[in-house]
Length: 594
Image (cartoon, rainbow, N blue to C red; front, side, top):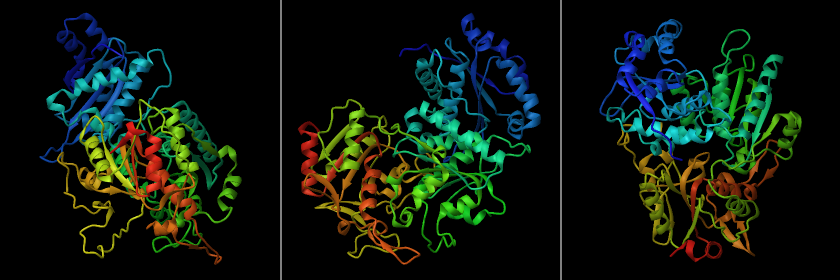
């Protein structure tokens, strides 16, 4: 859609400038309409204060807002807000604070609120922004000019990104959109299904707090890519801004038993000022930090299917069930659960115990998400993937102008294609992944004297994840420690596992399907003897002495996680000759790479 250019006015952020900003705008713009769009129409504004800058690090504190009267609102911030809030006081006292005032001929209240919200999503995902000072999430639902929202925002951002002096504050949109923070941001605009779920969660939380309940459980379920993490992040941010009836903030904790996703939540909390080391942490740390005698108000658990149901050296609770321990330490627990993403025998519930839990909390406290939010594909492609994952059936790959499925005869050619996709900045982050069918140990070196544990087939090989030596910082000065595996530039030379990519998006994913996945009698089967994933294939001994093996469920789950990572494309190669042949026949000659 073609839209008009935005009007963007720049000024120093100070008392003196605020008092005469309307007059300055009139002097800056000869066109009376442009003056009106900035003075009389709704506007969006960005206040930025540069912090300590260095060769490797650029730092900004930023505030984003919207108003129908820019002069009055700026004076309110500088006077009243600066007296009540330390963040505004810091901006007022800074001698280098600066402001953009953004207008557009089609701006109305709802559209400016949406622009403000998306601007916060983008800026909170920028590496150079260390603090985003704002107290609200304002995504709108439906309104008359909603179809103009995205193109107008893109025009605004691209105009700001073209300003040479602000290239670190406003990098290219694609660079931001590929970041894990952007994809998990609480400022993502929710779908109708997610909004309905959010309203229900907030209602249940308020009811439980009013009744002073302890251990109330709300479960959010849905397949990989259903938008569960975005919903969780959004609800967490909303509650972080609320105060209870006693005037105090509601106490919150956010947990995830996944090192990569933990980094993302910690960065979001730090940038938005909504958490510390005791509020964004792993489940075992939460259980150690908090006591049943002083429970947290609301505990969030992302990827609760990764919670342990078995003791180990780092988790020695008498209950031997992390979810049970968390419920004892929280008034309300909001947990995401997807049984098709359980990957380890230590995460399996014994017998009917999980179903008994479901029955005990009641259907009214279980929220189901059904839409596919990650994979940008036509319904027939989603159905094809579901048939492969859930039924083990390989039907003809459907035509789809949005989503690319290719089958490669050689893994080295697939690796090259993923490298090319990753090099193209318009495509964003792409990575190779594999089923856990090749040996790996973080504690020892390979027995054959190789430098790395590797995924290999014939004369092709790639190092498993976390092995290639990484520099301290990226070329842009970002610390590698702050980045998830997929975001680290050097990992294009590694191959990921379920343990590094679970919960994350990749624009294109190349999946090396190892020897544990075979085709027999026209259906995909999983062969535990061919897998190196001990946590999935070994027997588990329960407290009552019974032993069970869960490989039949866990190995398909592993394949599910890998096949559902790609937003725009899925590249495939299988070690098993029969499976490879079936994939090639299903893809057709136009989608098979020789």
